[in-house]
Every structure is written in structure tokens, then in C-alpha cells.
Amino acid sequence: MKTLVLEEPGKFNYTDTTIDESLSVDEALVKVQRIGICGTDFHAYRGNQPFFTYPRILGHELGVEVLKVGAQVLDVAVGDKCSVEPYLNKTQDQAVRRGFTNCGENISVLGVHEDGGMREHFKLPAKYLHRSAKLSYEQLAVVEPLGIGCHAVNRANIQSDDLVLVVGAGPIGLATVIFATARGAKTVVMDINQERLNFAQETISIHGTVLASRDDTIDKLREQFDGDLPTVVLDATGNKHSMAKALDYAAPAGRIVFIGLFQGDFTFHDPYFHKKELTLMASRNALPVDFKQIIRMMEEGSINIDRWITHRSSFEEMVDKFDGWLKPEAGVIKAVVSL
Image (cartoon, rainbow, N blue to C red; front, side):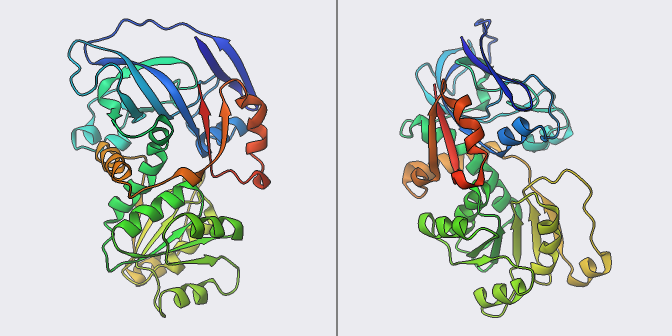
């Protein structure tokens, strides 16, 4: 079967691989139809993705067709269109037993810790498939990145009277905005790129934007929130300096959620943190309930991500286009590959 392997940073290789199609009673064999390209894939290509080894088959944002199911699989059937929840847990450890399947001690993420979906077929436990009779394969491939924002909002327990700041207007930040506004909260987006802020205003319902600067960002925030500061700050940048500023942006008794991942140590002035009585949280991956919520909202029409998909490619052409997608001037929000 057609397979694309990232052999080492900066080097893809098309090859043919085989798969044992025999299934355990709880497994499903799927055909990959669409693959979303995300920051994780770009970081792996550049050689700066944590928890990563080469060679690796990338691909964890997937829209797939079910080809075959094991004897005890009841929730999906042959022919179903599904989104893939790519966070596989190898053990029933403490986190998994408590329902935190997004951060199990022995979690294995498709396309990161083990081979993912840049191939025609693969098999996985069927419980990680989320089907829809209405959505297209392209829509199903975008459910996973939407899940990152959905989980962050659910983790922050955003309420309608919250004032919300989302830092970072990339795909994860935009996804976060969608679910924050769905809670009825006044939501503002901040970024250092005016074009991304313009895109956010054009494509989703937000209450305002802030172009981050060195001097007057706090003043701009207060203007957006009628003199107040945000009660919830969600940082989707993974940038150390941006994350540090979140403590300044948050209102006293506010909540801060770090969605983006920074590879290094993060420090803050503890007296200031205590003075404001802030709550600091991390948000990782998503839960099965998040996938179900997103699919329901997309089927109902309350989420439309058609304009988010700014770049498309066939599987055979992807390697030639990949370097170009890395360039800021390409304006990639979300690229989707078709098999």
C-alpha cells in the first residue's frame, strides 16, 4: 500500500508497505481518505517535535472509511465515515481509569509515538473511531484539531459571564474561540500577525481582536473589555514569552490555560501569582466526549470550517508542496491531503 515515511528531519520518502489485515475482536481496519496537516507535523519535519523518533509515518488528523471490523465491534460498521481519536492508551493506568484518556501515563499518539495515517490503510481499536452519517471526510479530518480547542474550553469551565482572551490566531486558537463563544462568553483574539487577526474576524464570530505590542497591550485589552481584564486567558502559541505575559493579562482570580507546548522551563514571580490568586492549567489533547460534541455541532451547522482549509494536495503531490506550506507568506491555516 502507498505509504509516506518521514525518514529524518526534512526528508520524506514514498514507499510501499504491507499490513496484516487480521483483526482482534475489538479492532477495525480503515482506509484513510483525508489527512489534516498540523503544527505537530511541521515540527517533526523541522526536527523540533518533542517525544519523537525517526523514521515515522505522520498523520493524526484523519477522516477514514471503515473497511472491516472485529467480531465484538458494535459502534461502527463497514462503510462508516469516521474521525479518528488518535490518543491510544496502551494500559489502564490511573489517569485512564479516572477518565483522563487524553493524558494517560502510557499514551501513544498516532503519527507521534507510533505510525500514523499517511498510508492507505491501518488498523486500530474501534473505540477510537467517531462516526458521522452527515459529515464529509474533509470535515472529519478537522475534528481532531477542533478537539484541542474544545477540550481547553471545557477544562477552563468557561461560563457566559466570563471575559475570554485567546492568544494565537492559528487553527488551535481559532478552534478555541469557537467553543468559548458557544458558551456565550465575550471573546477576544490576540496575535502579532494582523493578517491572521483579519482572517479570524472574517471567518468566525468574535467580539474583538488585539494586535500584540510591547507597550500598550494591557491598555488595548482593557479597551476590548470595557476597562476590565479577561477572567480566562487561553494561550495557544507555545511561545515562552507569550505564556509569561498571560499572568499580566489575566484578571485577579482569573484562570490561565496553556494549550500550546513550550520545550523548556517556564518560570514566574510567585508573589505576583499569589497576589492575583490565579489558577494555572495545562490542556492536552481531547477526550471522547469532545469528539462527540464537535461532530454534533458540525452536523447541526453551528461549526463551519470550510474557509479554514486554505491549502489542499493529493497524497502524491504533498512532498513537493510541504516546504512551501512552512513559509509564513504561504498563509496556511489548514492544509488537507487526499488519498
